[in-house]
Amino acid sequence: MRRVITAACAALALAFGFAAATSHAWAADEAHARSDGKDKGEKEKGEFPPFPADASAKQVTHVGGKTLNYTATVGSIPVRDEKGKKIAEVVYTAYVLDGPHDINRPVTFAFNGGPGASSVYLNLGAIGPKRVQFGAQGDSPSDPPRLVDNPGTWLDFTDLVFIDPVGTGFSRSLVDKDETKKRFYSIKPDIQYLSRIVYDWLLKNGRMASPKYVAGESYGGFRAPKITYYLQTSMGIGVNGVVMVSPYLEPPADQAGDFSPMPWVTTLPSMAASNYEREGKTLSPELMADVENYARGQYVVDLLKGRSDPAALARIVDKVTAYTGLDRQFVQLSGGRIESRAFLRELYRKEGRIGSWYDSNVTQEDPFPWSPEIRRGDPILDAIIAPTTSAMVDFDTRIVGWKYDGRYNALSEEVGKAWQKGVELQEATSDLRRAIAADPKMKVLIAHGYDDLSCPYFISKLVVDDMPVKDPNRIQLHVYPGGHMFYSRPGSQAAFRHDVMALFGVR
Image 1 (cartoon, rainbow, N blue to C red):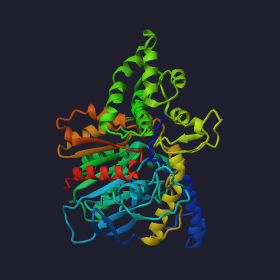
Image 2 (image 1 turned 135 degrees about the horizontal axis):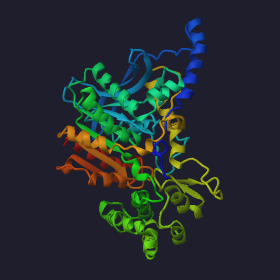
Image 3 (image 1 turned 180 degrees about the vertical axis):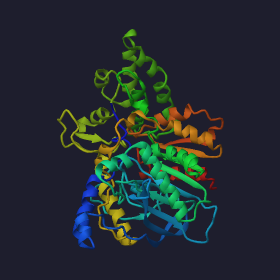
Image 4 (image 1 turned 90 degrees about the horizontal axis):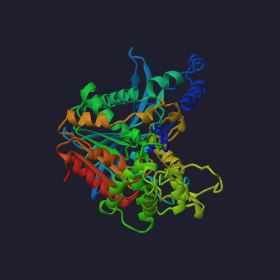
């Protein structure tokens, strides 16, 4: 199949993406303890060196013509087992606006995906007060990791807390590999301990009475409704709103492509969007309406007809060729069922380039253009790890002064490999429905980029259209030009910020 959730919604995939290998981080920190322990007994036991105390620094940014003075804090919160033993330490980055305490000021908790991505992509790309460039055509790993004011930040209307799950960023497990997998690398414990981190941060900072929001990107968007429902029903924390960025809500829609039409239906509109952009067209709901109607209409019917209607394949090939801009013979040989990675390879084969799964119009040279299989990383993922890692480590250790010399893990396949198998067969839509039903005042915004093939926007559109909600304004779906990290495009980020402000009730 085209996607499994551990490899796809990165964060990224971006989340998007993957984060740090716990096995590598555990081994590295264990070695650090052996060499730098404070006494001989600590060295012999291989215990972890302690994290530094929470550190804060005064910062300034500018957005919407306003100057914002705020405090940035990097700190850690312990995770404890049933007996109270500390089994992990989760690192967070918080941005709190300076000034008199306002009980009505919201706080937003943000998660990226993978599983295995740190929160750096939402932080330094989408909504934090500072940003570093990544996710667009022409970006390079050697680009200077310089932080600049982020015009898309949410800090003027909500405080922000970015949480790095165990195995990502500097967050670390304190138990062995097998216990780490059991405690942290499957859906249920992931939701439970991350929800507890939210609770503990609120308690620690005296913010239990503040309005609360949850934001998640990619697999973080899969987490967001589950965390929200768990907070509501198990932790006693009401959530005012949820923002899901490029979420992968319904993994079962991507299964059984040899029989089900859904894997092909859900990606065709994004392939058409990519083609329209290459033709110089401006993407809009009106432009996309035709392919969307075809995808869930005649395309489904003809795919299901198979050999019972000899003319069905010809109709499919005509339409899919026109929408995607692919070679007709390729579409014919594919049976009108275009696998997303094959699409990216075929689209730019003549130019010797390959497109990104996260934004199909971001390309790089293909180092093995004659190979029958893709033998390179993703153009976006290859370019983001260095600038985001360097910028975040510099911010934590030098600017804020949280002095820790362990490895920072932004993206890693190791966490994905260790994650519970069979995740692709589960979904988050049920939790979203339950959370909305549990709180009739809670609002939801789902945001996507048209060109994203890792987490196609059309899945969310089908989910939202099928939601049994009397007030459709409670669940908003907005799609913007761009890919998984559509916020890398200034116009899309500005539109996204505007839509989020409406969710928060900001005029």
